[in-house]
Image (tube, rainbow over all chains, first blue to last red; front, side, top):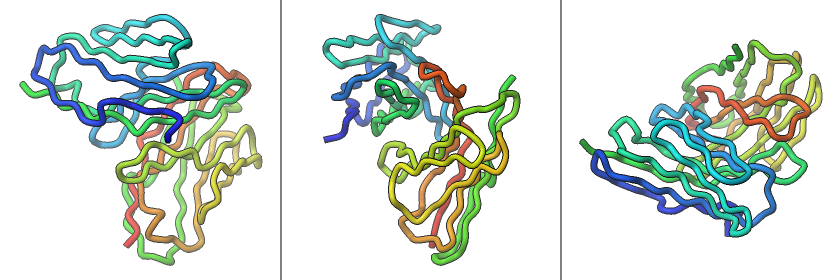
Length: 109
Length: 114
């Protein structure tokens, strides 16, 4: 079993829909990252959080440390949101990340 | 501002040939540097980690090696490529000594070994 599990693996949506991607982890962490990987492969860091909730534009990330679970929400989804969304956790007293396998999102107009 | 460069962007190499991928970071000093591989259908896997010139930690046994000849240069190498070395290779950096900073990724190199 992977230390970081994401669900769903694949997700399709119509433009405007509210989207949720989930991440569960089984190790102690100091931080959790949400990353976005575009079709060309480039990766952009969306959020780094260790508690509570963060919001950037239409993106919201939440984390529940007790339940070892995080969610990434996209409101009013748009075709340009189509990408692979990756959850990664940083262990305690380490700079290294453990990655989930990603959620492939396709948003259709 | 900081930027990270990787080259080449794509590479097709025969089995048994050597490999050299380069990563350079601009706009920061003494970064932590990382090499990751993303195999088809799998998550990113940390291959090497460096906290300074000449200091390399290998995370998984494999056919690859890494070197850091300069503070902001990180090189991934192989003497003889295997088919299983195919994948997408990403370099990343973070601020040295701070466990809670995010990592910033390069554009990646897509390697196909035939």
